[in-house]
Image (cartoon, rainbow, N blue to C red; front, side):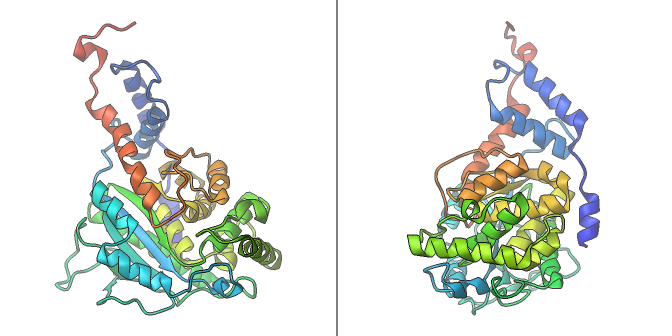
Length: 375
């Protein structure tokens, strides 16, 4: 599945982008007056191969959740059980991501790809291994429902190994997580999603994210590592030392993204990379959240450089590694509010900006049609 997904990813369509630029030049506004929104709409036209591109409606947030063996190194003040507890909170609708998703009318899907402790919930839905849909009890494909968060059981293993001691995952486990992300992308798009948003949950997951970002960008671990949930100075230095030790132990090769994910990544990072690849293969935009999404996007770009064409940087996380990742990808963030929560919250806040950029091409009159004189 991974190889066929990568093979389906193609460059942006030059003709559609040229048509979008030409249309912008005829709309009733000064040329370039919408700044970055104009180039965003041009890129989305290139992704869709049409001008104007489809409105990014029926948004779907995919929150991938996993735990991390490196938690044993004291990189987070939060107990590992909080991962499962927060999933229960997502499903009850009580998290920040739920509030923002309700505001945006976005559906929320939580995917257990590697949670280590039992989730206090009534149950999960299986992901169809054939690659199609999450099934309801009657066996028919479920449509997106913004009012009801749901949990998908796709657990590859109950948390990664400690990346300072051994590889976090085997290559087969990393591949399974990536392919889970691809299947989730297919399922959400088949159910009607016109744009996917990345989300994540995993206590300690900013540590492997920093390792991934350092591996793919060549940055020093101190530059790629942030304070995550707000750790003190001693814990921050421990995180930096852990990231440095993991990179020195494994020496991951950035030209081998599966190997990088296996040695220093996490299950949610790998699954998010798959979600991005799946969206790119289907020519559907994927709105990136924060530093976890940025690290996954670097892996996706290493698998398929043209996958960057499907990526939209929702916001600039306060985590320093996020800026490094966006710079490597050549992406500019739509908003910068100092956020560092994760979950998909920043991507959801940026969603109306993306919709607005496309709506301009659909609804704004041209000078000729409005009878407005050009300069």
